[in-house]
Length: 92
Image 1 (cartoon, helix red, strand yellow):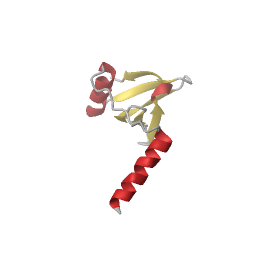
Image 2 (tube, one colour):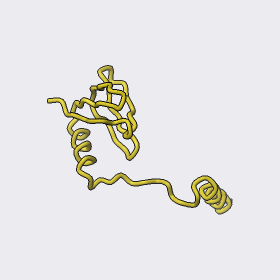
Image 3 (cartoon, one colour):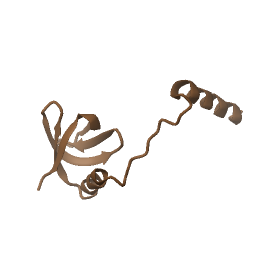
Image 4 (tube, rainbow, N blue to C red):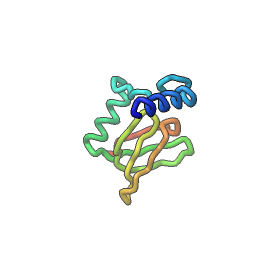
């Protein structure tokens, strides 16, 4: 029974993912990734400018290879796609 489920999952992965593993790992050696991790570890408040020109302020909570998340003034999480980022500036 378990083997059948594994085979079904493998077939689905081949059908929808081309048989390739589409999961990417975060490139933790990049200076930008390490700097953001430092902001997260220190609970740093940041100012984030996005491609619409809006400026968002909050505490950087986490990052992955697709998005970052900041908590706004009301402690609400804001998920921002990396491709929308213009700059991230620490607030002193």
